[in-house]
Length: 140
Ligand code: GDP
Image (cartoon, rainbow, N blue to C red):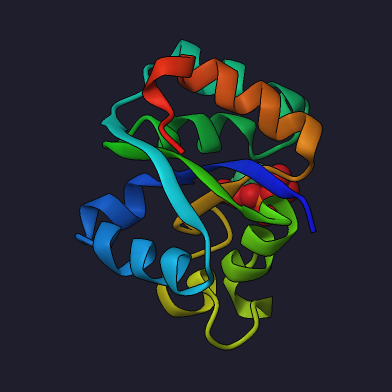
């Protein structure tokens, strides 16, 4: 299988509860390597740009408020089939539907405050990585 990269965010609900290490342990246990990582705080413009595809959804405003409510960890993960593998490790969007052992089942607070983001396709991963990292910040 091809080595691939995906983009990840540890969201404000998780940094607030000191879960960065716990989430990273699950990422690494799944065989994904964290090849870039930084702690940042987004402003409204950055959150709106990142979640632009959801602009028309009823929860868009709340989502932007949530994503700007505290620090986040942005990451690049690398491994075999990384996009699909990380979606598996994350679990379903709504933690009530997430499989046992997944990040969202163990850590998420709600469908909104669901602890992590992961790219949903290889094409989106490339876009999201380049929005958040320059090439020299990613060390494979
Ligand atoms: P993901 O790919 O699993 O993160 O899910 P989506 O792309 O559908 O949604 C993006 C993010 O919007 C989710 O991770 C949640 O933080 C938030 N979200 C999704 N659905 C809802 C909803 O019904 N209500 C609220 N408040 N937030 C939602």
